[in-house]
Length: 141
Image (tube, rainbow, N blue to C red; front, side):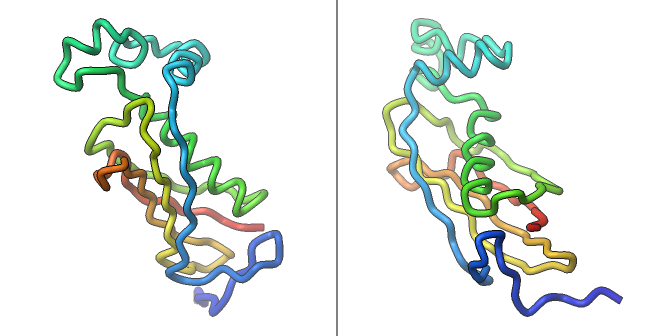
């Protein structure tokens, strides 16, 4: 029978609290979009060609979804060193542009057996619009 923990500590020996929200911010540059395209091989012009992107419904280049996912992974790694990501799901309801301060928020929603945590993941633009939302499950050492 699984027993659900009443508390979990992260590798830095800090208490992990249900409902706790971890927050970070980032402002993307076109150079970051270009570098991610170079590294990933995803050279879709919506990400790397401002002239092309200007003619789309977005009006300018937009972030790769996996670049946003990388931001989420970075916040997880900083707060839970050595954690293993077991699950991740996300959607991209709105575009992420360069030059805007994006807010990354990870909220602990469930303490699971075997030192696992479920977190809601969200990235919002300055207008409060979700540009990436989802859920992840990690196991902390």
